[in-house]
Length: 434
Image 1 (cartoon, rainbow, N blue to C red):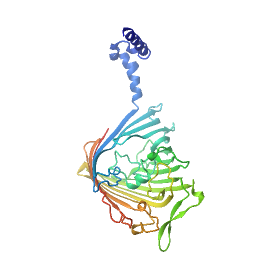
Image 2 (image 1 turned 45 degrees about the vertical axis):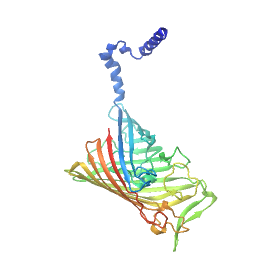
Image 3 (image 1 turned 90 degrees about the horizontal axis):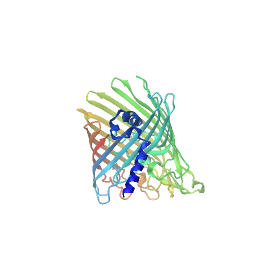
Image 4 (image 1 turned 90 degrees about the vertical axis):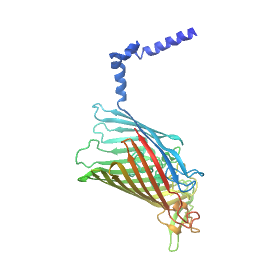
């Protein structure tokens, strides 16, 4: 034991001798040598490192045991209420400054989420800035798709518990692996309307699957006018978005809706060339935001509209995480989002009203869905959701939210969907951010 102790002591002495010249004696930790040679260089490396994060514990209740829901996922088959940790994330940003220390050469971002359900990576990307003016940048890795306003609004700042049904169906997890070029003037001048342009190429499946399953890619672009004052205390902003992509058809059977004088139905195309062909996925979006600032807070209106083509299966229009192997159904869809935000008395209280709708098949409606021989299924049903809530802001980092979602589905001739389902959801949430 004595020999082992002596050897270990000698090893530690040699190990630290080369890296801690200013720490030869314990007293050196309080000396100017330690501050100059060790502490300052260490802090210099950390001054461009930024940690942030937030946590959202919540309680929810719904009308029916085992209700399917887009408010944080389906309820258990034996439960109509639950406590859950909706989100808990930690984010690390590292800025690599330019030589003048007034601009950025590169940004590295890593965000991790850990809840009672799983642990996963939300963001991991590097953004490189062109060295002269930093107006152009290249982003590579896992990051948010540049489509729409609601999809890109952080969950820590969004005034409602969840994004709309269309956002969750067509853009699950909001992120994807790819590469994007951005034009954005970082140095803002007074009365100067700033435009941000994004254009990128992405795998397509996002985080909904383990990885890329075909060779087809999604091209996504967005042009966004940042908020600017057009009248005293009035601010406006807006954007246009486009997605052009698709995925490989795993079957030769393709269904497209035909409309004749008497009926509407999915007709089958079984050409051999359909197998391996591209199932079209094309979206177009427009959004606008209008805000009025007054002495006791703000009044804000937001609107957004999407339309396009979405491939899917007979039972869902959800963007897939793994390659579908069954027949492909091509549907025309549209989606609408409206927000109304109003401070009450002061900025610490805020009322929110939201309406969102998702119509996965705009060519059919109501009693047409479920008719014999039409091949129309619950995947073609339109949903309208109206939500109201009240938020209490205690600080910039702590808030409480009480919110109720009224969920309405189309009445069809399908069994189980011949009336409105009882799937309204109440959410009480606490959010802490740092």
